[in-house]
Image (cartoon, rainbow, N blue to C red; front, top):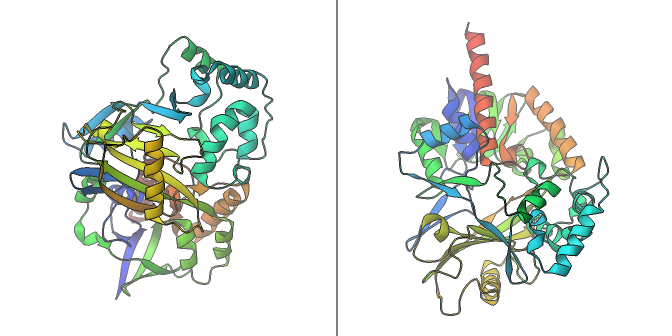
Length: 429
């Protein structure tokens, strides 16, 4: 069957649903999975409420926050002052590391401080790793920033662009260190976050309830796109003749679908990692009752981050998520990784010997973090220009192949929808 539609949205995650909610006129949304949400989904097991890794909502833009809040009834949102720490050699250091080095043993603090004061920055560091050494000095970089980010990205940091994390990477501010030494709290936009009581997936559920069900097709994977003919086909054999296609799915999956297009080779420049998420439910509370998540740089633990759902949701039993990074091509044995993670959690005192694991699940995010290099950025810019000629817009963390927040995804999707609405109104008039 062939369907004519003004706007075809591919992907039912936060970006795709936000675009659909803001579009007027004729649109259809295709989602390959049976459930909407992408990685913003919530699982429930044995009384535990778990997401696909930690999805917490930070806002810089008042309009975006008001839109988010409008999706929930009073009392459905938790407003939380963030408490995050770095687990380093058995002690908890306040985050970010570079402004709390005074919490280290004296000799390490002096080494970090001396290197920070003696750093030599250049106008254009050659890589993410160069940027770390130049901006923060050797000691801070090698104590925390390099080992943590190598675990997270699962690749050499020298292969990433200096701006790979953009505005999300904390700066090296001596004023911040001085404020911390004086015991002053510095408030940033992400010092607090919002979280639905019933899990991050509640946002997706709220968004989807605003959409006409007949315009949302789940279990429909895109299998082919002819950009020149403005024609797409899904896994059920239906064909869609569109005016505009909004892609929010990962570029590494979308590019092979572009039949006969010369820019498919751009996919060879794309690199990413995958992340195994272990959601773990225990019989009773653990030793940490305030912390929301911990950063773990040391190599004796496979994971780079541990999060505490029970400290966010107010649960009576310890409920953790553990994140482990892998190269894109690596084989992942979830049961083996579970055993290793549990051993490390107990060794580090985060899980006591008598606290039994009573529920768990393993979720694989692939891709998880995109690797942004100078080559990939140039290739993606070229790709977006070329796709636009065929009426294709590609947005979101994975569709846009960028490091961004859920707020950024929401704002970009809604801005694109408004542009398409205006264009349709101008054409009609």
